[in-house]
Image 1 (cartoon, rainbow, N blue to C red):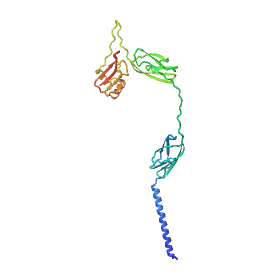
Image 2 (cartoon, helix red, strand yellow; image 1 turned 135 degrees about the vertical axis):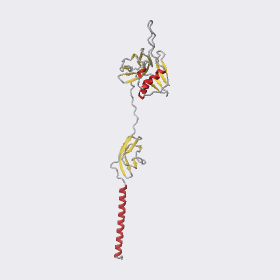
Image 3 (tube, rainbow, N blue to C red; image 1 turned 90 degrees about the horizontal axis):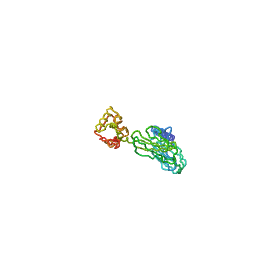
Image 4 (cartoon, one colour; image 1 turned 60 degrees about the vertical axis):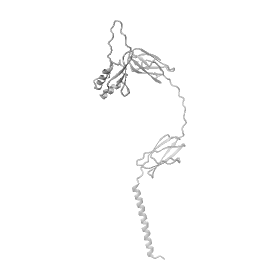
Length: 302
């Protein structure tokens, strides 16, 4: 029979052991509580893309503070461990998407995947097609003939882009340009159901021979390399603007200039750049002239 003394010793040792276990468990609980972040109040999952069979669905975790991710797409496919995965579902139905962040915080989002839609063939009736028949070149002061070759048009609106308004409303029309340049001829048929554009280059008028017994008109001023370079320098110094060139180019504001780097611009655009930047570099220039009018039609800057 055990003595009363040994029984008391045993009870004391048992109590000490239980106390130690409780202290250790409490310390572990406190350590984990202090070292783990709390779960966010709301885990935000965004879904975008094609929610159909074989479509690519984009999943995005918008939760602040997330550092680890575990995505379960609910279709027995392998998990994904990145923040913003893409996934393709092979069967239609409703899926519960489970996201676990930071190893312990989770959220579920339910999505529906629809069946793949078959392509639908829609018969679209042919629309009226406007067709401009007319020359690509013309001359100031000479009538130019245009017509619409479409077979379904019942109304027409012609704009030749000199007046800023509709110039004619018939299927065929004659128009006389008053100034040289490149113009867009616009035709609208059947009340704006169809529009087409035709580009035309209008050259300066031909030189007129003097009438018998009347003196010849004064010759226009001649543009040469020195005059052009000096005029461009005045533009750079803001002592002249683009209209300083008007007498030399028969009023054609669309004349092209080829720069030393082989790029091509309109002379007006180039003058605006020189005027704005207050700088001009160029040593000489050569010119192409129209044989009928002697007006300059192109410039090359060296």
